[in-house]
Image 1 (cartoon, rainbow, N blue to C red):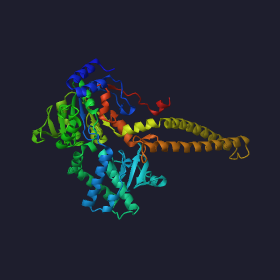
Image 2: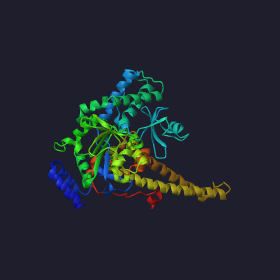
Image 3: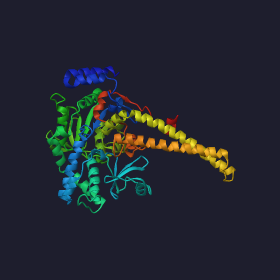
Image 4: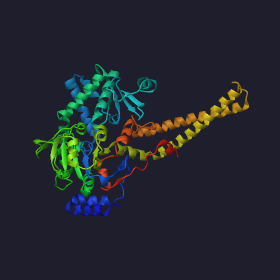
Amino acid sequence: MNGWSELIAAERLAELEPTVGRELLRHALEDRPRAESRRVFTNRTLRMGKIRQIGFDLDFTLALYDQNAMSQLAFELTLDRLVERHGYPREILRAEFRPPFCRRGLILDTEHGTVLKMDRHRYVGRAYHGRRPVEGRERSELYRQEPVKPSSSRFYRVDTLFELPEVNIFSEVIDLADHQSAPVSFDSYVRLFQDTRHAIDSIHADHTLKQRILADLPRYLPRDDELILALKRMSLRGKRLLLITNSEWYYTEALCSYLFDDALGGGSWRDIFDLVIVEAGKPGFFRKNQPFVELDAAGEEVGEVEQPDWGGVYRGGSRENLTRLLGGRGEQMLYVGDHIYGDVLSTKLTSTWRTALVVNELEDELETRADLSSQHRHLDVLRAELAEFGQRMDGLDDILALYRKLGNGDTADDESSQRTRTHLHELRTEHRAMRQLVRRLQDQISTAINPYWGSLFKQGSNKSLFGSQVENFACIYTSRVSNFAFYGSNHYFRVLLDSMMHEASI
């Protein structure tokens, strides 16, 4: 049960803002989220009672776009740019938009034209060249002869949801060229990647993408009725809320007005945030020391300042200059974003701010895993049996080796060794059948989550590269900001289980 002071605050809010307050009061009386997929998960213990300020990113954090609609729009606009400005044949417009193929955490090999998924040990577990899976020996020759270095210029890491369309385009255009189903050619895979990157950057830079979104916001940006509840609840007990986004003022104002003004019963979204920073230039915002530019209500420049003031709207700036306003210790600030590098990693490396990562894909994956709970239990049993079979076979192998040693290599006529070999053969036959069953069950579970890449957070039995980054850099993570509506403003996010393998076995 939440503290009485929070309930009293929620009751007071219900009097002042009936459209928000009644729902907030109901949430304050609930013990937990209604669904497992709406939980907040903890990697590092976080006491919300010690947090004094909470900063939010906008795109794909507060503004949780319809991913398929947004990606398809960017996909089509980028293909048009490749034809109009980069000289690609119109036949590439036949490329198919495949939403399941585009995922965060993937890596583009711009030298070989492949799309990869790695585990946390940098082992490439899955790869595609065009639509063709790269299997077995070919994948081994490409990625097991020397260490794969994702940070090198050869590889491009897909870290944001904005980048998903270019994964699709890169793979589709390669497939069209490989199968000669269209007169498509390019100088190299590197050039194709660079052209695609430039084309998708251009639809962002000249506002083509944003203008199309603003022209039809209900299509691209579904409202979340619980988002305003989460923000109101998080701001209880005197916490200040900040908006720190890379988007321009005109776009920020339009999105936030659409998301919040009606929910506030005619109020303004500006009343939610104690400070608004646009065109922040993250991740540079966390590393560089540069002044803020104050903006008026119309988004026009007022002047340059070193330190912002509460209640204002600013462009640019830096974390270092913002820190003077925040005061106190860095751990009293929580920053919530969706970009593993631009929002979370950069924050971790340059400050002691606490971090929350929004992973929207988590919601669907958890719901799918719940539907597959019986298969997961069956898989756990089979894996335990496989381990036991392996241990028994190892023992029999060593017994045969001992027989050979004692018999000077000749054990053919030894009755005991014959029985041992027969038993070992039976175990190996059963073990082989069990491995095939495990493989089929793993494929069934993986395909249900995603037909190309499986779980976002796992690669085989290991964490994926993305999953390990979430674990290492996000103090807490969840599928959407509105999930915080189910947690008290003083909630203690505890690490419930952080075991090593030797502890898990016990």
